[in-house]
Length: 466
Image 1 (cartoon, rainbow, N blue to C red):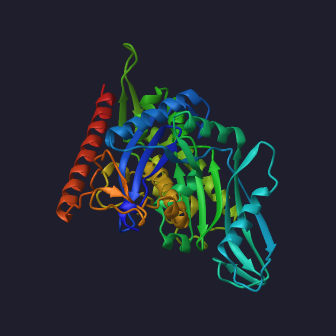
Image 2: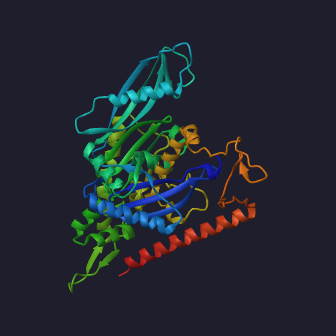
């Protein structure tokens, strides 16, 4: 697929602390080129769930406005939206169907039918199925088949992971997006989006656990032999750490957040014993001296709790240290804490590393998007492209060019098929650009786009200064 044939896909990450909108398109090398980027502070979301729809709409519109400022030529109508929250559950099922035409090989539509049948699975009242993910397929007595299309057999089946969420929580997300003037193309579980942004095929095969530490929740996705084995939402995130610091040290929330980012450490032993942070007093009150070691102790306690949940879930699905050779990949805004890798390795017994979303990005992206807090948003775009590539033929039919019928010919007198036109309107003429002209236009576009982003971020930094 050439670049001009690829659609522009927009990911919308509705998080507890921030809302981000990123627009991207794949280039001829299969890498994502970012065409627009905007973010805004999130006020109406708690623990990954939309509680105040009006505040969430304002934040979404602010993010979209910032995205438009970064690229005024961009038009956003449809978005892929991430969903999280402790209401998310997963359950294992097994489904089989006897084939109507056993003489021929299995077709793709039969697998689609098998997957869609699982959407009829009984789930608790008030819940709704978000996604059905096939794991190992089996055809007759042949087990562990990754792709059954083209295989011959009488009966085909699979093990499935069904992801469900609270119906009201899903309705609130859809309502917020729709009232922001957008169409929800699909709802994607945030840990799966983050995983696709930071993980390679090698990681999937080796076995890996992706831990996305967000503001309100920490999302876990476990992959083994190329298959999603388990997913879970841990109801603690960066906001909980900030609140622990606020309560434990008696400071304002903004001060707690600043201390966490600038001086925080996930290991008490690594913090300097004689280092202190001075917090200005409120309205003439004396300043506070806070020990960096005390700060690290609070952070380590909460992070240890989150990692204990990870260990528990890994044991539940039988994925211990001998199975996951790829270890733990930490991503999300909370993964930037100092010494978190060492704490993760100590508690889980697995190797750990930070997962950055630049695995699939084109080389000319801005530095800001390298941060792990944008993993979900980049992953949502990749999810959109996965859908697009799977349905490429359908898309191709939809985007067919309009051709002039050959029977319509114009004679020398300016009449078409013998009918003389009284008025001829000027039509826009397509011009062919040289490679040099195209490169000049592209470079001008990127310069303008990056300059707009730099201005936006400098304005945000100015607001943060006292």
